[in-house]
Length: 206
Image (cartoon, rainbow, N blue to C red):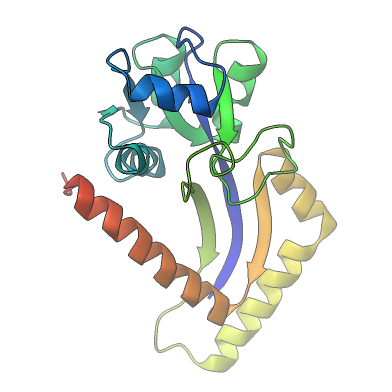
């Protein structure tokens, strides 16, 4: 098992939403005027769970509108059908540069070299809010340790190559390269964290 990389997510809104920061967005969501809808790529996706995490943190209800993929969800926010979304940096970067979306924060645990001027959601006023995609290699439980060790060694070597890191960085993906022990601990932590949010939101498989 090897954790290869994490994909950068951001919190973005339609330009018509009258806020310029996460702090102002929090105020709006807690007010009577804060009746916003959020676009997601489907039930249980990181885009959806990000919205539910936001709702749980603030005690509000941004209603999730589920589309068939990240592209249609982004198009919905760009077109004003929904007003807020959590999405990968690569999904929204072009729209943000064209002024068709406003990106308020990254949702990683620390600031990203890909967008160094953007604050994290945590430092901007949403403690504990972390949303990211992650990519790893897993093997069957009964795989011989020698095979696991070799695959882990080879994959970490690939991820560590400057060319790989540069390609990842261009699309907002951070190279990690954690080994089996670290990856297993990470999966357990993620499972526990998202299980609480899923249960709190009452989400079920459709």
